[in-house]
Length: 474
Image (cartoon, rainbow, N blue to C red; front, side):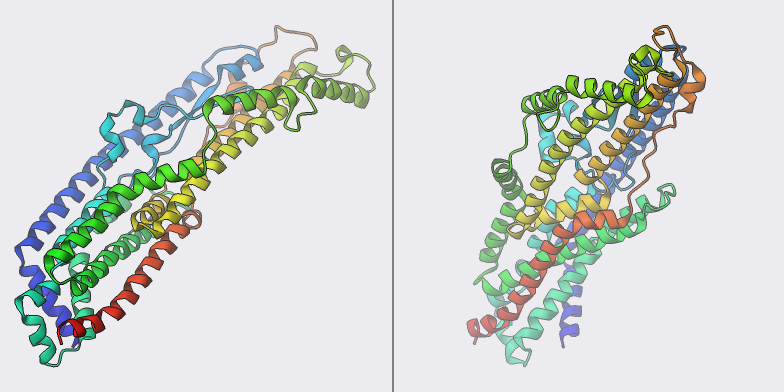
């Protein structure tokens, strides 16, 4: 009986002109966003690869100079464009894709696309994920709000129950039929995901297909949640108009009010360090050390005494190597610990905020879905942190090689020493291997579990609805 009702509901929905209009609207939105985003992502990827090649060419052709001076000349490294960014851009518009690596300091990433955007950017870029998160639930509400309330208004609900159709079978059948229609509407998004995945160059370990499947499952669950809520509201409301009003209120809270409200509340409860405070704390620790007792000057003096004692010398000029290069190696180790400590704390603050917003999905499922979607697409904060840490590791290696060259090859006390192309070419190019699905799941798990909790609650609500349905139309 349930399958028969589901089939009839699916056929009725398919014949409904509103459904066809919704299908065209979804096709247009998903298709346009996928085409535009893919073109933009491809352009970004090409530009970054070209800029990386040009940067490498400039580095190896910089001419002869002192090794430490080359450390201040520095290099730019570029974050690879995420393969699934055309589907969900995540935080990409709000974080810099370029890091400048130089001696003595760890720089923030630069060239944030959002800085060149208009005030309208706060509403988000047109993307398939935005359409599915915000517009698609509205379409579901408009299509499903009258599924049972409309039957009641037309007087056919009482007739169906009198014919022996059980309330539970009626509710379940309608929910299944409408969910099947929803999956049909999701087909353009599935095609867009498959197209993006198939068009992505092979990246060992990236698990792009697994990520795409996870995204498909995530949005199917999110859409199914709104189908369940719409059927429940339609069963409980006295009229289709009342059901629509309630569902529109839920949609407005979930998609418009909750994101901004959650952001403001989380920022107030878990404030991140301000830029001026961050710079002041870094500068203080660069001078006094992380423990506040071992200042940089005292640390370097002790390091000098220890080095002289180890080599049995009384003056640095007597050492069998250029002490300036060794001192710079130690100074970099000292300052790098400070930079990594403070940037690590800052990223930890951001991630706590991010997790708190995902947990706020208990009140508004969009927040949980958005968190998981960015993680599966590889465009979330965790992925950006991975790039920043990889850039810092590359900076440490880059500066170490230069300072070791100065220590080993420059005569003690000789400030005219220069290195050339051979040394510059010995420094490897920056490479960031793609993260696997396991990394994505560790971040997305919280949001996915919150959505699963919503689905369980919605299913539990549908178990209560049939009894209310019989009581209202007995």
